[in-house]
Image (cartoon, rainbow, N blue to C red; front, side):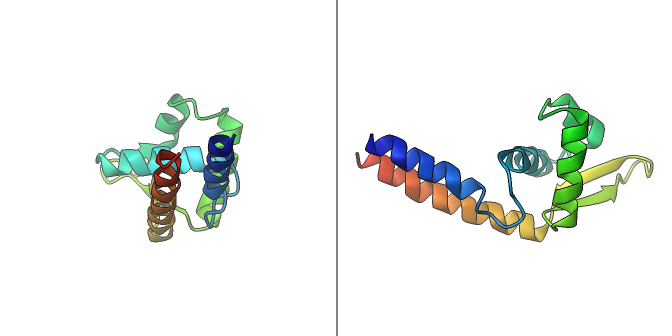
Length: 112
């Protein structure tokens, strides 16, 4: 039972991050950050193909993430008609904090 309390607490840390209000925000931002890190920034179409949600849901969450300063929306270098998304410095810092918090929680779980 104690393990599940800790897992629930770990999950709650995810939505405590500034600029992330829902798990869907977290999922979308993680995909953006991951693809940015491997050198392939995501366009809206590519993000939709990852099936992180319906097109309307993804657009709504993306607009909120951009407005809250977690994600940056910019034109692609090779085609100005294509919009790409990347994490902002605020987004990177939030995920670094999240990662450290999750490491602590996972360490606590291993002690059980």
